[in-house]
Image 1 (cartoon, rainbow, N blue to C red):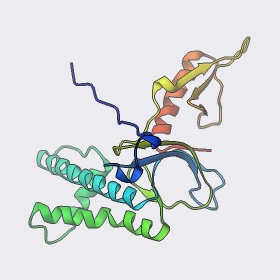
Image 2 (cartoon, one colour; image 1 turned 90 degrees about the vertical axis):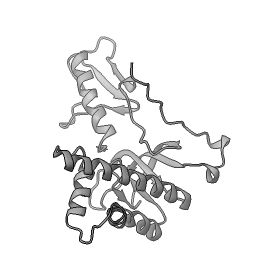
Image 3 (cartoon, one colour; image 1 turned 180 degrees about the horizontal axis):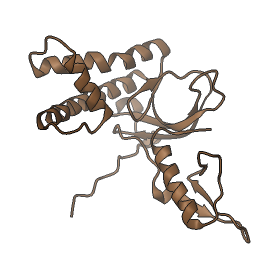
Image 4 (cartoon, rainbow, N blue to C red; image 1 turned 45 degrees about the horizontal axis):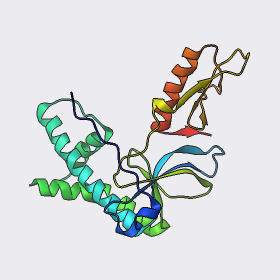
Length: 218
């Protein structure tokens, strides 16, 4: 049997001084305004960086992640297989069009100059930022509300699981409804009730992928 993967350890606020933690990553499940002209809010998990230490911890982990992705990208190119992530493709394109690449150290320096300054500059300008699962970042502007907070010592985004799915029906009712945590399951057409338990659960599974991925619009 394979080795069971351990879950990231959650940190109690009262049990540790935030500034003394080896790694400090504050994830928030929140509503955020994507653009002033868009009435609907975006809801999902983000990494909230609002302290210098939080930024430093993130940059350190992000740098290590880039090195791992760089090694994986070189392996893909050598074996002529397909890229496994958009970031691997971005790394390949960045290095492909970069001159003066003599050593691996040159490559790492080029990648650091390409991928890291945006976080630092945004933090210096705004004082805080949100990072999504794809490592894209945005400032906190306009409407913003934290619904849930999860502080961890590793850069692993929280996720909902199938254990969070609940399918119910009102007494003597005809339709089935589904929730994931406190979120009502709604499909692309705005429908939130289904004729069978099986259909409701199937829609909840699709909704789960959206919640754990790009998030939802509310």
